[in-house]
Length: 596
Image (cartoon, rainbow, N blue to C red; front, side):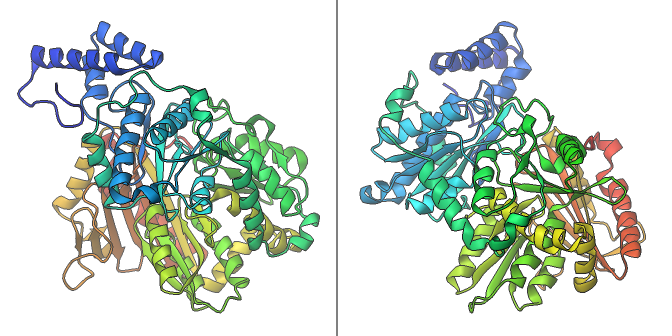
């Protein structure tokens, strides 16, 4: 039997290939105990949809540093009960190779968001750990993603799993893994787990699992984690005594799992009662009011929040994404329009707030992804804090944070421009819930109490630290071969200039090239499986092009540090427009811009 994920025999074409696909489909139907996905596979076979069978069965969903994430559907390429079971089997056997039986008894933490199948995927994973005598701490109801890494450290567990697809569309789901240090997987664990999965594909549970049986054999957690999380979060409150006079703000959970915890946090921090977007406060796997449940998507995603704020006269909107690990901010301006702040701008506010209250004797450290704004480097260094850049992704950020803590530094703040923020070391991952409370506190103190807007505050910070302007966006591209062509074309002959702007340095982390270094070898780790090229220009501007690890996107990140706001913006926009026309060439490659 051909095993999915190890390559369809190259010599099979035409009718032979179709026959092999049908053989694989029949095999799937034999092992699949879920009626919905089994029926889906049968329909594909009966209607002879060979292209769909090929997509579903030939290439296996790969376990990477983000764990698993894809559309929920039948087949080895997607998220479903079979691939979740196989992934968990491989993970368990890998853990058994790392830890002693005594260490394994420290157990696993398993949580889940409110998406379709999240609860059943979590219970399925729990049943497999139980079958290998590994204790399980299972959340009794859907939970914010930050609760899992928090619980891993709280319970001293060896592993944590959160079933979530974060802000992806409703048909997606995912399987996110945390190690015993509370941080996400990093290389080489991901590759070794993937190999362990491939080596152990035979299902341990042929007929599925029984939910009642699972729940009777796990330690259910939620209340303890939530209470401890909230209690410890108060260490980050700087002005709780005056919070009762706070100006009202509007909050949206984006149909996700953040609402319950945010309400409790608001009360614990002493803020004025929270005003919520009623249509979006409760978990709903349909995400009925938003096409893309992502605060980054702009006006479309935040339309109801802005409407609610206008109705009650509130000036600020705080939004969590559906699993509450990220946070977005929008503010009404003097002319009645709304300004949605970028992740870099939100980071400026949070970092300045944290450094202004830093009194610890230990040296402070700040970590950011390499595509994030360099203004935060200037802010950090203004108090002598160490600033470090890492590859994109919070797994790298937390890994570097742990390294710095081991050297005696105290983590002050870490972030990525994709609205991911970690205040202190409350959680070893991005955390939109704590970030929301800290942000509301700084907003009340820095802006509301003084009668100014965030936009005014930001201008003052730029006057102090410099005009670092960014322009970050993306194009959708659903064909991996096209994405590869875009980057291959750039590499064929790296540009010496983009428009009228000469290129000074080029760093290509996909192939391991950096001509700013004496040996042309980059300081940051190379990543052959992802596309990432950075251009540094003679005028100091920086442009990075990269692919998303979880979505079909080509992203670009552009920053320029100038002397005045107007000149800096004009120079940046000219450069970015030339870059899009010269390098990305959307019309040539059929790239689709976002709707908002």
